[in-house]
Length: 114
Image (cartoon, rainbow, N blue to C red; front, side):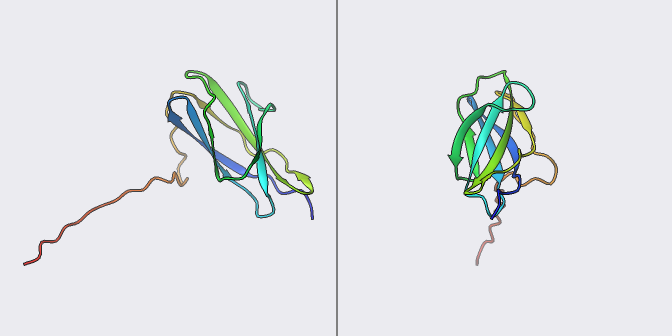
């Protein structure tokens, strides 16, 4: 076995001082580490051992720009860094074209029966 390939991430600002990362891990990863900084090339580890597909960072301050990267982990080590994403806490982030935002839209049609 070998260290996993690098994961990919996208970001969403949830408001109220919360930024959410959506992480796509390679199949051989068991968890990931989140890195954050207030400048590009985030290298300060925020948390390790995360296993969920989403990570919510509730320690951000409004009107502050944050950059994030993650590393996938397994028993053989860490991956290279993921792509880097950034968000200004307190300002909504638009989802990139072609990205599943997880939003659910329901259209209702009622048919009257006689």
